[in-house]
Length: 380
Ligand SMILES: Cc1ncc(COP(=O)(O)O)c(C=O)c1O
Image (cartoon, rainbow, N blue to C red; front, side):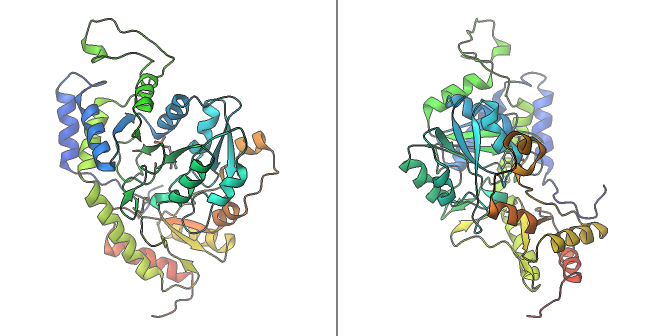
């Protein structure tokens, strides 16, 4: 559908084109190349971790991470259901069981108390997300992980640059994954990364990412023999993609600033509408607004009516997320008994509105006015 205002627009400039063109014009190193290492170096500096490894998607980054930790059959990983399905699928990729825990209503992330109740002797890791760019209660989740000697793997796919009191998400756990898919804070079309301080994890991930091959130099430009020492995949990011990643990462602070300014403008207008709750991160939680999600406490009927009403006006609004445990695949696998009251309630009340750096004042007014049409407006 051709939306008047889509949910997101990619923020790109001439440098994205220049960097990608340069990588192409070299006529060499389109797979493994210098941009990959440079992008990784820039990423680890930006986040503040010892290592970053880029992947061809956030999903392969998750898969590789669980493999690297040796998580597998008989193990359990605690995940939210209020997430993109890849978070929950990751344990299944390696033969482990995703165990859903409920979320809390401050950040829409995993509820540390609910998580603690789901821990069993089989639990190996907690895999929380930072919903839509808002940090979750990650310090509390880190305490739970520490207390029970569990891995904490942050799914920071949606939250590059988000922070709690200046400490970036992705640095609270043992490692974190990022996504550079089209709708993320910065994008390479498709792409992902793992960030970590662990040398051991980094070395294992390098092998898993590239066929289990002990690479001492660029495989494609050397005739030296390289041994294959473990089972591996091709989860590599291409050098052309990494060139785009470098150009995007150079703009990340500007992109986040523009997102925050637009979110503040939209919130100022929507706050006047009784019945609409705007994003409200806790004090010290630095949101990056990968999603701008409102909550309609009147519930499902009103939320769905608003989505339809906005669509008629050419405004794309989407539900992030319908619970993963309600999908056909998980219902069939898990049966119908699982109850996650907060997840289920929130998924009936949330609606994500268009949010991107180049959103104009006129577009913000158009969105706010369209929403106001459907609600009684309280002046002031
Ligand atoms: C929370 C979360 N985890 C994982 C992923 C998967 O990332 P990718 O689309 O890059 O595979 C996404 C992306 O949509 C996501 O939002």
